[in-house]
Image (cartoon, rainbow, N blue to C red; front, side, top):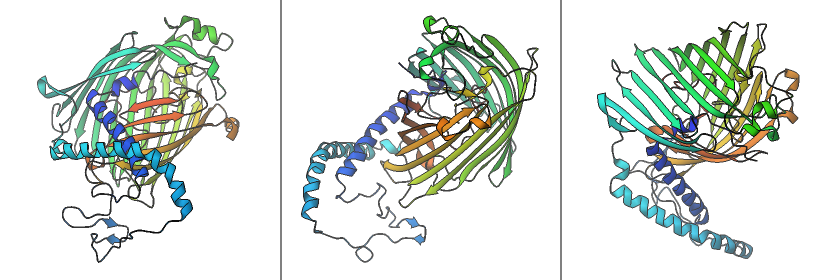
Length: 495
């Protein structure tokens, strides 16, 4: 049974065609370079591919103990014709045979990259924003996505920098699919002095087919059902820079969430599959105001390849219903990330943990559409988004990253590989938190890094005891301080 879950337009909203072409090409190159390098490990590493060679200025790299001199005959030694044991020669025969096609492919790729570099392909000045130049100083980025539930989605993002003044931005996004999923949202960001930012945003989104498996950590994959979800929202956020990489976030927004029967997959409707255990709030509409205050600290130096420092955040929010019900609840959220530089250049170990909890302070049960779940940035990447629902959620991530390909210097544009393990669970009571209730997932992926160490995109494959999950994203779960109102993100899904 297909366990892929509807992404509610997230992939469609981010699938920008220009960057997609770059990512696909870089991924192919990454695979070839990785295996080619492994199979050809005896060959010396050339300049520019994370080597110890000096750059064009003749200066060596800077290590943990200070500047290192450029390689010369007086500071380096080369061992030629190292003797090997007979068993080692025999063991290398199948290794060399398997590696032959990869070395050939790597050679072709390397020559192609060198040729493009000589033509100036990697030196072309980047556009201020991705997209086509439009009227009134806008940039228009069309996108296309194909999803099993939503069908084919067409849409466009419109960005207007310097909106009503320097430092301000206007962003609009709209999309529609062949299966009547649609979204229209946008926002503005105003820079107020050096320390303040104001975001104002609103939007509406309809997804006729959303998967639902049940409530709690023990919901089963075999209980797959479908329902309709519609959301509309509007609000603002004030961000304050507190110095020393601290920031304060104040947010308030109104939201309306509708859950009802879907017009598709009626033989697996939520009402039929879960007839004996219909979740509270289905069918139904929930309206209310949310007030949030949060504090974050970010002492990393970049978003692409951070190898030291960390990101921490904590917040509390209050929801108050405006639909006549006595629904009121508090949400507590905590996030901790730490980056460790390992023994080789740009090899990094990442540790991350998160904890979220709802505290119902009203007389009305919390509708299932507002329960905690695994959604960005608190995802288990081996499972689909919104796979589980509960009053609490927790998770632990371990990720190892290393560079595999770069057309130029090691600090420029390139592709990094990573392996990860995401583990966590939802719960209603603390007594349910147990090792045997945890979901263990893992996977592999690639991160596309731009110039200046800026994160650009990721492509990953996650595994669990359910179906493998493939993701192509232009956002990340780490160092999360996204401008959600500006970019039209549904605040009822993003924590």
